[in-house]
Image 1 (cartoon, rainbow, N blue to C red):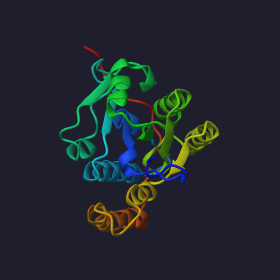
Image 2 (cartoon, one colour; image 1 turned 90 degrees about the vertical axis):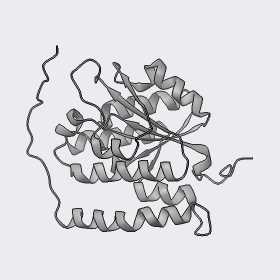
Image 3 (cartoon, rainbow, N blue to C red; image 1 turned 90 degrees about the horizontal axis):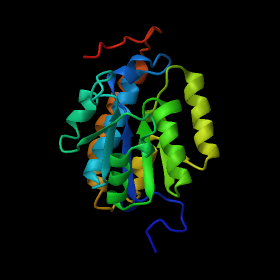
Length: 218
């Protein structure tokens, strides 16, 4: 029996963290959520997973095709040893290298976050559910161009049986016990996190809606 079997909990030893398409072009079209909060939450998730020895799969779309860049540097900086898997398909589950990485991790519980909620994140999560995986999505580390797109995608995910959670919620669930060997790492992460998130919430910042800037392809 696994640690969480029969409890509904998501234990660190049973999870994989999937970080999907945190790239500049995705952030450019986020207008009704604070981009800085999304970035902080994604970075904190990545840091926690690394500290808790949770396998991390980092994927991008369109970077090799030239119309999108790599993973944003603040997230890339906390994952120096995690190789990016670049794709052409918006649904990561349709990419052979991505699927191979999921299988190699050997864990059924997939914790997902990414940009944008209604496309790359949702497509991947729905396909993973249909393939028999347990899926949790971290709603405050995800964003879309406007709030309705984000919210409707969250409804679709929940109706497919994916479990909603938050950055702090999943980190607490991963360790759950202040006597756990993971608790020291959790405290070291959460104390500065709360200071930074408080600062951002005191002075929220939103972008003026604009169209996409299309990169020239070679």
